[in-house]
Image (tube, rainbow, N blue to C red; front, side):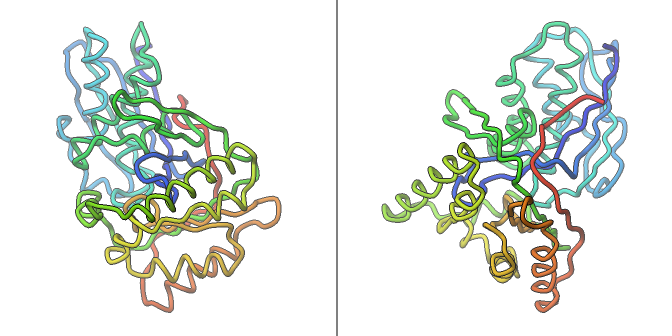
Length: 310
């Protein structure tokens, strides 16, 4: 291959009780990453278009796509370079893995251009290195599901080990994106440095039952288990309207609701064999309207298969 085009979807991280461990790919929205080989070594970002493009650097050493692709080329000892054109389908600072999609898309595109392909774990690791540069920490809860698709669990970071689970077919997702942004770097500074033993037990119990729900296809159990009493409450001060929006979603029939990543997106899940999710979305929008908080965009979607070539 001399050139490729890759769809890189938005992702949900944490899913309430699984901070830096759980992630899930969405069917939409998504970025489109176009890449072509160049004779000169190195990575070039030729253009960034779409939502939020004005705040995304063309410096490949600082751009999510560029850093991830460079890691792939380095790990594979490639003798060529890559030029990228990026089309953003959702904005940075959204809480649904904008930088992760760009990073994963760059890593997957670079890997497709290789003669000898890297294994999926290495692709995820290269994309996670990009997250270290752009958000200040090596984390794979967004790039993992973006590369692999479905629901992913990070068993271990050193060495990096991920497991993929196929979510229930009837798992619907509502995404509400308020108009303000939250930087991952800022959101990580408010996280408690120490956790009470009782809180740890609570989190482990819910995280374990969430995985059980994914494996057994129990949407209600998944929703009940999306409960976090450590990270999410500490981030609520950066995400006005969060708690009321979550409450509105549950009262409208959602199985569970949680803060998407660092925010500001608020997520609700539901059984799409019972409802189309619109009453849940309407209730969340009414909550934000009462709080005089503008909403940029909403989606009613489901889980997806991760990066794919077009």
